[in-house]
Picture 1 (spheres, helix red, strand yellow):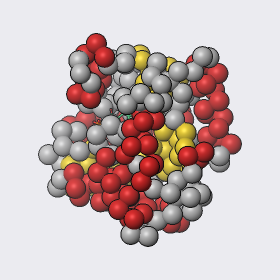
Picture 2 (tube, helix red, strand yellow):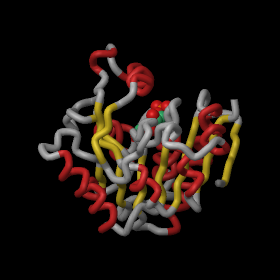
Picture 3 (cartoon, protein in one colour):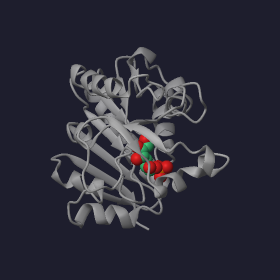
Amino acid sequence: MNIIKVKDKQELAKKAAGIIAGQVLKKTDCVLGLATGSTPLDTYNNLIQMYQEGLLDFSKVKTYNLDEYYGLERTDSQSYYYYMKENLFKSINIDMDNVHVPDGKAQNVEQECIQYDEMIRQAGGIDLQLLGIGHNGHIGFNEPADELVYGTHKETLTESTINANVRFFNNLEEVPTEAISMGIGTIMESRSILLIGAEGKAEIIEKMISGPITPQVPASLLQLHPDVTVIYVAS
Ligand code: F6R
């Protein structure tokens, strides 16, 4: 693992955006795996700025998001599709036909999950997967468990994740309790991985980097991946 410690979230965002920009410049039709949550927001702002300065072209880039809340329409302001549109896609020249987020309202969830992984394979696989990390060590919504699931699947969110996400909702009752998430295998098949952690994530990141490889800390599986960069605020 390539570990980069930074002093604050601004430096984190600059470095993370630099790595994503490097990928887009190197391969203009690259496949990016994207994350939501609060951590990537500044990174996305940096990418938007680079696009506005004429440094980046996203017209041929394809994206696959890690996850989506189960039961939410794309038009719901709490959906991850909506988040991506508002916080990145509407401000860059990406072709919305090249944008993919699991369908939280899929009639046949099993089929949706199989198709999602198949679409990623048909696109040639993910060149660079951006990840955040939960306080409990989840990546995507692969929650700590005795066993992890390989492919995209429906996951029941843990209490810790629901409590962490309540800040985006009016109250606890509104927070979805299930999500469709890429599996650990889907994530591990990416050619390269960039995991970012802002203030408050140093403890779990250090556990992920040097603790035992265990499904109880899903991110620890990344120790087995040959090309992972971790950038985190060391406080
Ligand atoms: C989001 C996702 C989650 C978040 C994680 C950290 O698409 O897959 O794993 O990356 O929960 O969230 P923040 O950045 O809000 O602390």
